[in-house]
Length: 335
Image 1 (cartoon, one colour):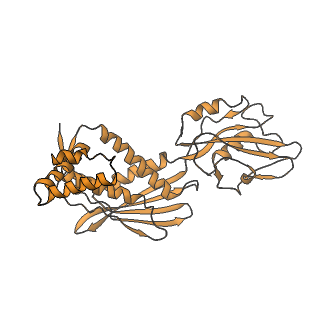
Image 2: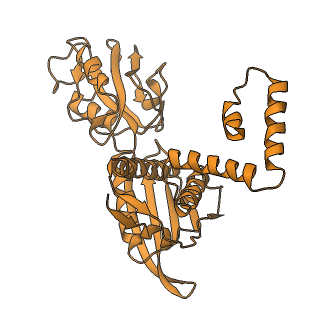
Image 3: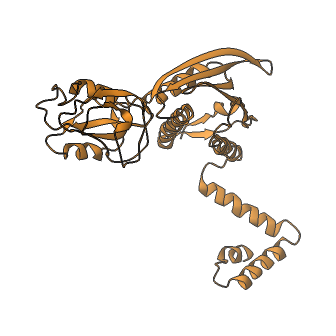
């Protein structure tokens, strides 16, 4: 089996992650220091992931009684169906759910219709409640039903949703070109900085969303997706990694100009530290970890004065506390 050195253990992990609110739906995130060149690599990966794989709800079907085809005017209103569909597709909607969510509009009078006039019992929230849609004539009631589903890019989150859409009534118009784009833009800016006498990269990400997700959510979702992809590839790799004996600064210091950064990053960093420790000890599998634990116990028994007596006392106390506990491993070591 081939062996390679894990040079990434020698690369400095960002010790400073600062964020700054630019406006209600835009934030700046700065990561530093990064090894020269990694600013562009990591920045491009996070940008693509945030733009293409952030989940949100979107319009997937609509029903309007009294129309003949998808290009008809909506009866008793001053809007046609293509314009209404385009507006509903453009709405920022907050929520995550597995199936279809339904929103209804029923109006029996002449009035101006806004997004807030649609009611839904499902777990979704329209962000732009004050957005104007159309005006009704009041001659006859207007009844519009819209169905929404969650997804990313042009893909439904759950493949079973497609079957649910197809099973709707024949009078329902399916939206074939639905899209899920909660992240409007992600820009990257990489600068050269000096850190401990070395030239390093400083990466700044500026994320703008439509309000259906927070900028922090878009960033953490991008990190999570990229981590999962490379972890899956790594699990399939036959290459054995031999760690170099290099000390790596893995602790993260968070500088926040507004609110504290999501603490979900801390366990991730801790897992890196544990992984480095195990690799330096040449422990790459659970089997090796158990073997090392057994060797340590045998060392305690045979090399340390009083070790055998201590282990016997431990086994005796365990049996006294609970006679059903299996202490066969300790008894084997004593034998």
